[in-house]
Length: 386
Image (cartoon, rainbow, N blue to C red; front, side, top):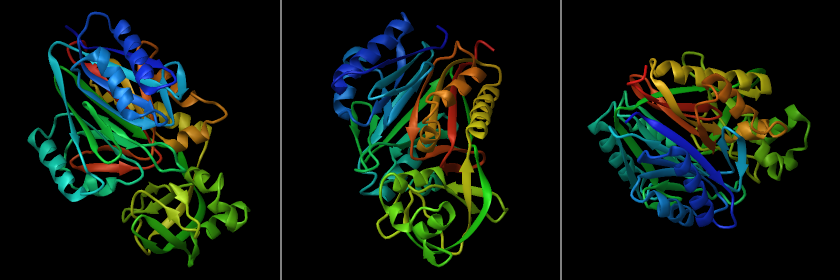
């Protein structure tokens, strides 16, 4: 049996019903194929275990992996307060899912468990989802084996409350790692890009601690942004500016002069930026700004790179993992970013996805990389139909 896929989505008052309806729709579209993996992308407003129970009531023992998001994506556009279910079916491929509990409480031990798991079959494609508010994903990636084919993201949710969750098998919650590994007759192509560019404003990170950037050029980080954008410093500590700061990430200069994007989760009451990756003291940082046109080009580039990486295999499903900043940027044109991906992939390739607080991609021969502000497109292809 060739590789096949289908996507369903549904809204309902409770998570169990939404999950059940989305799974039902996906199974009907899938036909007679037996699913080997289900990807569940759920509104953070639903109880995660209810969602899992609803999906599993129809998919049975099919391995499930997923994450929470403010809005799910399909080929039809965006779906808020909904559940999206993507099913992958094949007779000569298989998937296994692990739930590694307690990551945010004992990250070193769980990171080692993940590293040992990935190292067993280092070239086996792996999906990984972690908590976007509390996980140290940069350190997690650094601990993975060089050359590992790992892709995924950090779940998103209520920015005010800081709650998000992951789904792995029959389990779910905020503090664990959800891991899915594929083997057999399935090929995975991964592409990623962003549409943010430096606009000339330069800062020196003069004080940071852990996930907090305290001062830029010797003054509170929010004061530096207030000077640039014209809003009073005190307003950056309150909605909407304390969250809209995500639209304006910092490009951190690397030794080779390239820029790595690092994005605020929010602006704190003391004017510091709460990040989900560390930024060292003394780093040179540049203000980055995105546009609809540059992000559209980036979405098409990511989809094109993912297709090229399939090496001619027939694409059957695209998983799109975008940064939350993309949803903010496209607020006046919701779904236009997904449409750009679909134009590149073709209308016959079903799409499922969601918005995240960080992205994970392979690092080539190096360790996997943690990104902010990117769109990652993961395309599953059938190598027997090149």
